[in-house]
Image (cartoon, rainbow, N blue to C red; front, side):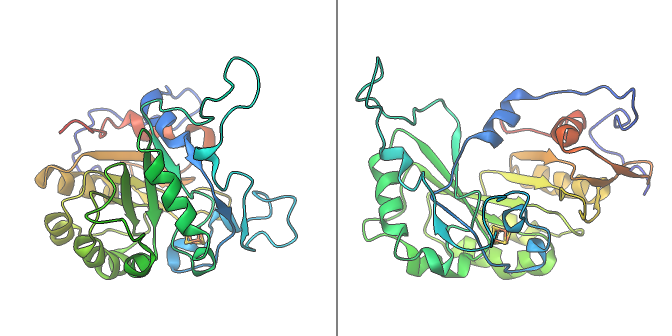
Length: 277
Ligand code: SF4
């Protein structure tokens, strides 16, 4: 695939002598998570290689996809019992978003009776910022808490889309949603996507883009990422190229296998990230 003339001025580092540029701010943000439950069911093409369904990710469960509450169900409301920190919250605000329900889907039907307590925890912990990433956004209206009003100040809803069809089905629902903070996540990016009408309607606070990881990862092309980056600039949407995925087609048109540990830094090396627009 040809170089499509991007903001990045240099070739990606893909060889054994490649320079790895680490952007700790973005990496740290991606690592802060709270998983009230685990297990899921596939919903769309983007779920095909979901790590949540993998026996490698849940080695102690016979059925990796089976729904169950996790030990950290109400983690934000837990306090230390002993020592110097006795009485203090176990989860402290460190300025990062708390990625909520990263090991499942927040709007899964199986979680309906457990979700009200999770909303309550988010409401009580208004000193923390929670980011929820969903595909089943059609279920949002029936899943909101009674005191939601115009939305909680400290909760962001990110809608995940992997291709044009997903974007056209889900993002009009995100545009209509009564939520204080809206984001779009194009990950795993499986094809080019025209987000222009949706960026105009949703006005997201952030567009995150990434490829797919794992041994069966589908291809993600830099050309698709650059196109989304151009769209984000046109609509003044902060952009984060989170990671390349395992099976990346770079600006030379070469397919590159990228180890999990290098996917974020390689993406960062393209210098497309801009969260301060
Ligand atoms: S909805 Fe999310 S967590 Fe569930 S299978 Fe799909 S990608 Fe995985």
